[in-house]
Every structure is written in C-alpha cells, then in structure tokens.
Image 1 (cartoon, rainbow, N blue to C red):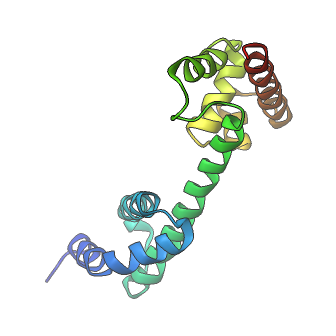
Image 2: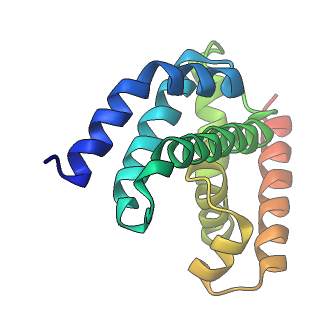
Image 3: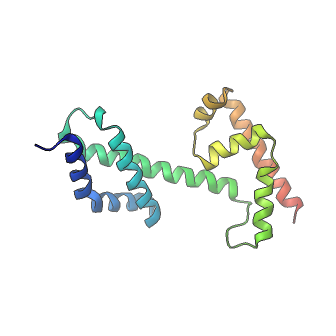
Length: 157
C-alpha cells in the first residue's frame, strides 16, 4: 500500500498540467504560473499532515494554488508600486544604479520596511509583528520611503 506522501506526489504529478493551466489563467504569465505551481506543491506537501480527508486532496491543492497565484500577483503589484518611478531593466545602468542607491540610502527603519514589504512580500500586519511596531507606523514608513525615493530620483534628473 502506498504512503500518504506517495499518493500526494502521484496526485500532484497527475494534476501538474491542470495546475499549470489554472495558475496561468490567474497570472497570465508562464513563469509566474510555474512559480505558483511550484510554491503550491511545496506548501501543500508541508501541510499534508493537516489534510484529514485524502479524498479532498485535489480541491485542497487547487485552493492552495489559487492563494499562491494571487499572492504572487499581489507581490508583483507591490513591487510595481515601488518601482513606478524607478527605471526599468532596459534603462541605462546609471539610472538603475540611481534607483538602487535611493533605496540603499534610506534610513534603516524605512529601508527595512521597504525590503520586507516590496521585496519579500510581507503584509503590513506581518511587518508590524516582525518589527514590533504598530501597523500604522509600518504604513507611514512605507509612505515616507516612497516619497524619499521619488524625490531622490527627481533630483537626479
């Protein structure tokens, strides 16, 4: 008889194409869909002990995938909000360096909030717990950081 782990991987392997198609329908990007599927399978495997009824493995896996795909889009949106005024990868190296320097020159508490929120994808509530500060303080730090970055980039033009 197969173990729960073996049944999980058999199911995940059999569903891989369907999982990708579902993730792609949400993300509309091949790489993002692949990342979402990968992350969902890892997260599902890590939480396999919480699944009480193995007959619900398929819908459970799709629910995890949906959450992962949406979170991936949320993280990209956060990063895009930060980088609206930051030159793209196709921009000259000097402009990208200016943007990187603007983030690097932020005071430590602002830089910490920016990295946790925009680069690592933590929510303001999670950052509040990590940094042991009120959520409103996190939000104001993110706002101040965006303003400082924008100002530095405008002054550099």
